[in-house]
Length: 91
Image 1 (cartoon, rainbow, N blue to C red):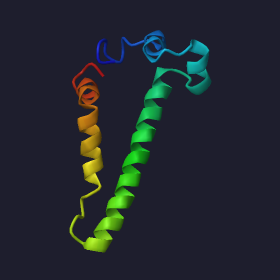
Image 2 (cartoon, one colour):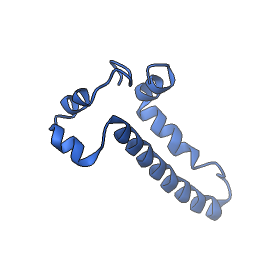
Image 3 (tube, rainbow, N blue to C red):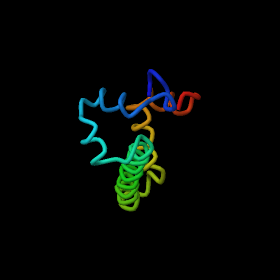
Image 4 (cartoon, helix red, strand yellow):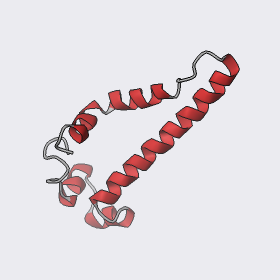
């Protein structure tokens, strides 16, 4: 996606980069859209866990009501190139 943009990206590009077979890819995903949705679902789950942990800490200390947002920014920093691609018109 970083090199070609999402629209030009093919399942073949994905399986070549991941070094998996086509049948393995399709055993887990119906296509590149399904893979993308799966990635967003994993992000949602990660942020929910971070929110729960931050809420528990905030209840205990009452000093960090927005602590859960740190997980979102950490994720964005870890995958900055991907975020730029998705937001910048090639996504």
